[in-house]
Length: 247
Length: 247
DNA sequence: GTGTATAGTAATGCATACGTTATTGAACGC
DNA sequence: GCGTTCAATAACGTATGCATTACTATACAC
Image (tube, rainbow over all chains, first blue to last red):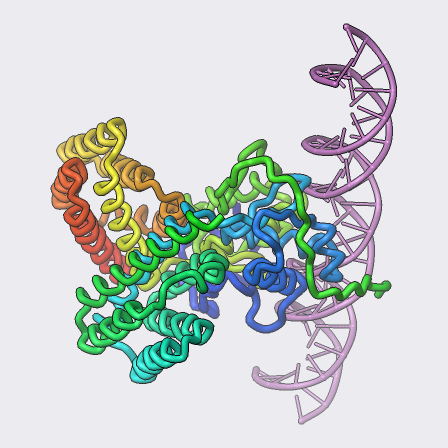
């Protein structure tokens, strides 16, 4: 297929381009500027799913969603396609989109991916060095976790934990890792919510986080990778065990 | 503008429904039954991009693609949304979709992801054991690579190499890893085509593959992970170096 | 009572129409 | 000759209409 000869060079010539080459790597929103109806539908549906307002396993018809969101089927349909690409719904003809339940086996898969990529990210951070502010953020998150643990505030603990991991991942210097980890986090999110109150006090998690920060600060990539890997593997086992006993 | 149905009830109630079927987890492309126009558009465009028929950096308008594919804009648009989610194009209003060029830096990112996930997969395969047919496939691929190397047939070598890695990944027992690796493979595909003829004879690659198979057959997960990691890291460095010197 | 054929219906897949908006090109002032 | 303004236009985002098709329920045969 040839591109229409606008002003740009059309054909197959691999012309190195100086086009405003900012690759948008976030699947979340298409334009940075103005969200269109499809973006809104996507964001709203995603929010409803991740918060649990739309129960796993339930179906949502295009027309239903369109009516509720005050738009036509077209942008809703596009949003559903995006959500499917993200792996959090499936689309079945004449049943609408179905919010995928996250089974214990799914959680195992998700945590295997997260373990792999996050450990790699931790290694990258340690090897390439970390910005001062990011290191401060990490230490603050660790402190907040300790604090929350003292107060038995699981909500605050989870929040600090998330902040820790997000800061770490965002420092890894690989947008594709960031994006992919994000995607699988969101899939695991509902399950984490579900099990937050069921798990034992995460004292060991706190120790692991602190050790990881030390390895990163020292620039010990191997240790950082290993520590993070063990950390996530343990968390994954815990979660899947809980989940498989739950329903 | 006509009257908008302002049913701004901010919540979507889940629709309870019977759930007869088992969860199907194929987020990317799911022409499970019969492919519809959108599936066709997706497959055709993807093929055109990955084969290089649509040059990196070039734009394709919705209308162009629709005319070319003999369908209306609607399914083409859906296909483009999918391709964007896969990270191989971006969509810019009034310019259509733009095939993203893969820079050396992009390749670094992609190979970091692949190194991580494939090493994990290799470890999983070693730990969980591998089906007899798969092991046969691996050994056959190794033999084919040796053979191709003797004959200086780079095309055949690349094919055997791909077969090796695909067999390995598909044996890992984690659909999400398989899917994600697939996605990033396709992003790296064009660059590999580009550099296939520029790289030195992959004798070392062959040795590495053979060693990896032995580790897997022995069930030595740690060795398998380590070997695969080194293998991919080396390949990634080679490729990014070539790419950064190329254009 | 159970199973099957059939008609009705609902939801989709796709095409198309329409309003909006960025881009292009030309007119115009300097 | 060069830059700015403005209108024409192209392409898109969205809504809507239509044909298709899977699901449901009813009727009917056994």
